[in-house]
Image (tube, rainbow, N blue to C red; front, side, top):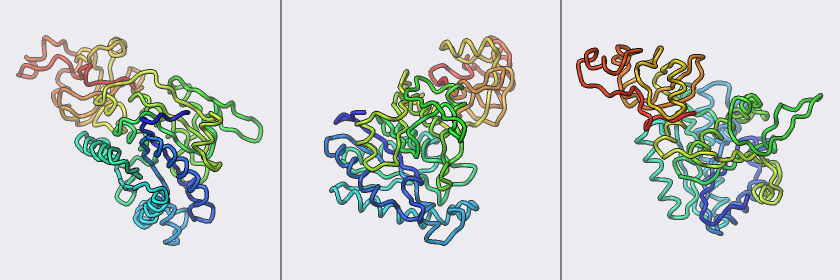
Length: 369
């Protein structure tokens, strides 16, 4: 990894790296990381930090058990206390290198709602223009179990999309992806390069957080890689256990690189990167093939649908086996869509009473995932 002067890079740090066993920030290690960041920044690269740690820091201050994750209410309370300490920590560390820090707290809704997503994009663009480094975290003080990212890996990938970043670096407590979770009897094989996040790669993931402090795991990192790659952004999982982790990666190249093999336009990458949808549409085998070859979804190819989606809502598109293979913006409300399931396009006006669109989801508003 040789970060060029003009690149925009997202650096994500998890709680297990930021917080020590004593519940205190690993300040010495953080100073070496910030030194690495300052070198890249001074050479012209634009850096955005996605930092966990607010819940862990707040839990210690409030004396909460289970690192503040015993309940949603405790996690929210811990986050509201810990975020002050976390932002102060980053501001102080960056100021030591004459870098202005900015704080952004984002929720899942901020990234899923198109208007709010564009607002976040505008803020990031202005901060990058002014050479400030945004420190971003999920707004855990208001996020609920149902409406949240739940981990900062996927948040980092969505921020990368919003900032039109060139690469994402996920600092982890392991060197990268292994084909199996190592145990006392077997040692997993290290995977240095991944061309595509497919079912074979996803099967290698362990969804747990090894430290017990954070909320992520390898599954969330693979999902982050899929989101980033969809937008034409490279993502790497690298070790953060040693000092100067960015310099170490640049020198050793040890890590797992998820290479880019395609890039959608900004609107399609936003659709594909969404973690929620308003409904599902299951299509037949013929429609599955047609959509994968670049076609639009016509009513005749639909088998069933679920959800109370409205026109322009994002829907998941499933193959006959129930696997999600595409996302897109619905051209019809669910109520009207039910009336035309399986029907030919020539019948739609008579069924609906108005001149309809020929596609339920147009190819220009759809992305394969």
